[in-house]
Every structure is written in C-alpha cells, then in structure tokens.
Image 1 (cartoon, rainbow, N blue to C red):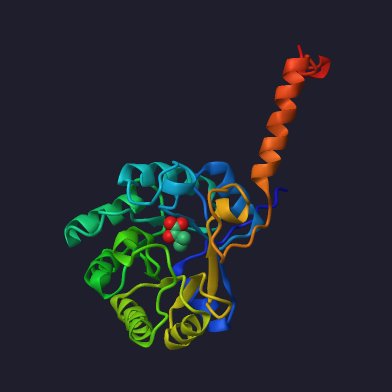
Image 2 (tube, rainbow, N blue to C red; image 1 turned 45 degrees about the horizontal axis):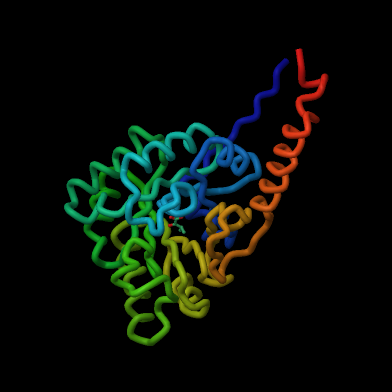
Length: 271
Ligand code: KIV
C-alpha cells in the first residue's frame, strides 16, 4: 500500500487565517527551480519572484530594466518547483503604470503563462485603482509601500521612508486604501519599526516587513542577501544565514587547482 502525502497549498485564505491566529508569515525571493524547490521543502510560506532579480541575478544597477519577459521566464521556473508555497510574481516597472487595462493583462500573464498564485505591485494610493481592477479579475494582489525601488529616482535613493509625521501618516493611509482596494497583504519596506507596528495593528490584512522591524505579521528577504551570495552591498535589515559566495569561491578554487594538477577526475569519476 502506498502512502500519499497531501500537500496543502498556502493561499490568500491561509495568510488571512495566519493573521487571525497570530502566526507569522515567512517569505523569501527565488528566481530559479532548484532554489525554489529547496525553499519549498524547507517550509517557506510564500515565494516572491521579485524584480530584485534585475540586481541579484541579471547584474543591473537597479530594478528598472527588468521586463515582463524576464519576470515570466523566472516565475515559470519557480512555479514548477513550488508544491506548497504560494508563488507571487512581482510586476516590473512599466508593466502596470501606463494603463489599468495593460496592468490587468500583465497580471493575467503571471497567472496564465507563469503559474503564479498572485502578483505584487509597488505604490500607495496611486495604484489603488489598478489594484482594485486586478483583484476584480480574480488575481490576488500583494501591495508594497515604504521604500519602493522602482521609484528610486523619485525617492532620491534607497532610504528609510515615513520618518516624519506627514510621511508616516501618508503611509498609514496608503496601507488602509490598498486594503480597501482588495490587497490581501502589504510589504512594508524600510519603514521605522514603530510605524510598521502601527500599520500592522490598523489593518486586517497581513503586513510583510523588510526593514520594518519585528511587529509585522511576516518577513521577507532577498534570498541572495540572506545566503551571502550578493556581495555588492548589504542593507542593514539583512541577516546573513550563510556565506555561499565564500563557499563558491573556495569550491571553484579547489576545482581549478585539482584540474590543473591532474587530481580530478579520479578513477572513481571515470568509465
Ligand atoms: O523585488 C523584490 O525582491 C522585492 C522584495 C524586496 C520585497 O520587492
């Protein structure tokens, strides 16, 4: 008799239930099949195929050059791997700003072509209509406020947002507007911990922090940051759980040495 293990997919209902029960949501980015498969097996709740792939995978200086084709390609790979985790596709710059129709169509591509279970888009009240229409199309939306990297030039750099009273009030109002527009969760990036706590307490949807302190309902990090694979810079909010860059360099140096010396391949690797 074969025993079949049934895996229950994390959904928007699961995320809502977790907020109700006070269970924290774990989220990481991934951009490829093996990384997503390992994360899924390790029990991650949500995998975000972030447009951060522009910086940590494709080597651009910002997320702005990332295209829908890049995102669809990587989201497909992640969706094939994720058996339990909810997969969120990150809408890249200019895929949702020009018109609501284009935004709904592009969000639909993440679901139809790439196998995602929802999309994320950056912005406050200015994306409320787009959010509402995408949700009306049956597509779960994760909002993203605070430091929104696609607006880096308008924000004047990658810096903490909501530090003074007017900007903090605006972020709180934005979060409420996006909840009302139908977002099922909201990423709070680089906002003071006290503000993130206040926003979290004011919403019935989950907040996912990245540089938002401990009081958010969940946490997200860029996987290349937390595994020590991206060494160009490390934001203050990152904790490194591994140093894979060092391990890769050591392994490659050993391989080069063994190939040069004729120590690899050995008889056990030969036919
Ligand atoms: O693109 C990304 O990885 C993100 C996370 C940092 C939230 O938006």
